[in-house]
Image (cartoon, rainbow, N blue to C red; front, top):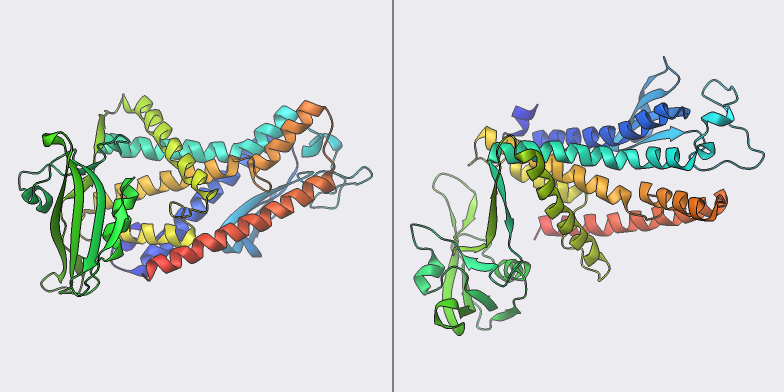
Length: 397
């Protein structure tokens, strides 16, 4: 199936997407299940997916089920939502569940372990995937966050920008762009590499024969950062014998720092990479508070990324497979990180209530906690809808 997904079929990409999502969800929920069992918590069900049950294994205490909508999962544990003062919980056979098997009655440290286990499992999977990627790539490169992040690429063959007079480490300050049929430029002040991408994409050619005019103002490092301006163009064309639209490059890339690791040193090098990745994810979440969703992806965005990598015909099967491994690690990391955020309805939100109970030595009213988690679910669904709508618009831009 992986081989099929690496062809040009969208059906194969959809199957690969579902396999990855279901695997990571199953892995996440397995963390909750194993730690719950280790703490002797009664588990009603281990489910992959939501909606109607299409498969159920009733042979053991816990029902293992597969549900119709393969975009989620859960482990249903006794007392997970709290237990009322006179409430009696029964198992799958209608028998009363002993109080010592109810999660709400467990010591706080055991509750915390069970709740955190899913996110931790995702981090473990991310480490495994990133380790494989780093070993196979002999290291990794990360973007620099200094003033020299706006650079032209070094190459034996001079790039368009190098031919126009730019050199590595020249700092871009302003980009103006327009199509060849327009008279007015659209101006972008550059403060990050994302600004550069946005500026170049704003008038990107969409049909063969179209031309994009680009005017770049930059600080010339070889002349004491004197401001200079150059004009370059990009054009759209179709490669002979194909219908694929290509856009010419001008040789602009983000300066990167190279870290080299081998089979042994990658064991700690992976932690180095995960530290960088944690910082990037934190920046992405921080942007949400100012209404910037550009760095977030929903299910549609994730599928689009998987599809573009899986069907990238100019790469070998091995490189595409390695890129898929990296994507699995990135999704797993994000899933674990997101679930451990102290927000209502998430594992981190439930951990927050365990912390409150530990501090005040008193359980939070189950009804109050349930209401807070319900509001959290509504907000999360709203966020998911916004992000997925944006992903749809991005696909059809």
